Figure (cartoon, rainbow, N blue to C red):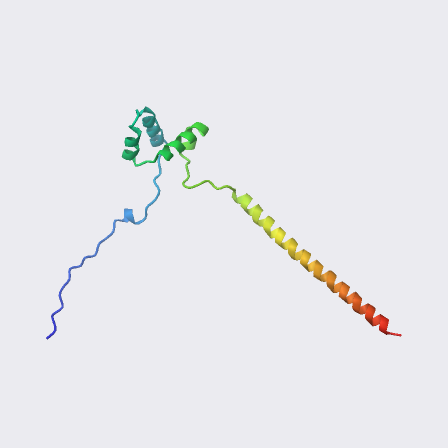
Length: 134
């Protein structure tokens, strides 16, 4: 005699939507200025505590200080994540067009060489046919 089926409770977990897609943190200009002021006011050994409390890296402070020194407060709010591209889209397009131009020049040169070779072969055949006729 088979066992009766056991009823299992429904253990479905609903995930937290905030944790489904993580995004980069974005810091306001006021926050960056406040943290930089706090970091500057820190005594020896207190900076690490500030960074841990705010969950920041020292490189972020360095970047923020550099941006503030170079361009002032307006640059602080325009920080884009990731490395800055080495070339603008226009420069990339120019490079691609130059590569395509070089490739087409090579094909043209090859085609011209083939035509020249065909002309020489045709000229030789004409000479051979004209030399055989009385």
